[in-house]
Length: 124
Image (cartoon, rainbow, N blue to C red; front, side):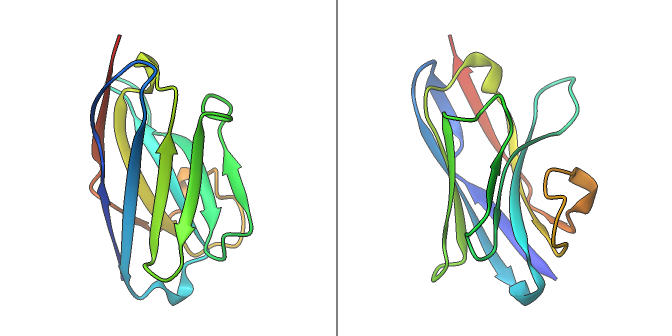
């Protein structure tokens, strides 16, 4: 089992920044990637970004490309999502998830473990 705990959500004005963190613990030796997803009210959960466990491969969705940056602190087993130039449409609950698969990290069903999520609200 892998446990994931997100932190760093909150309320920010449009144009502002937040940094989310995802602390991983437990049996992480099978983890191949950690992804960030978000779910806005009334919408399906969607892919935001993913980083391989080695940190060598990184992927972003089109809506966040150029504004969000995902990174990993290997020593702390913590994954970060730096979110800049936030927009009201970025408002959602943000989840981190761990995958034991070696590819397909944009696909929600390819993730095995999920955190509880952290709320991000962007005011206009």
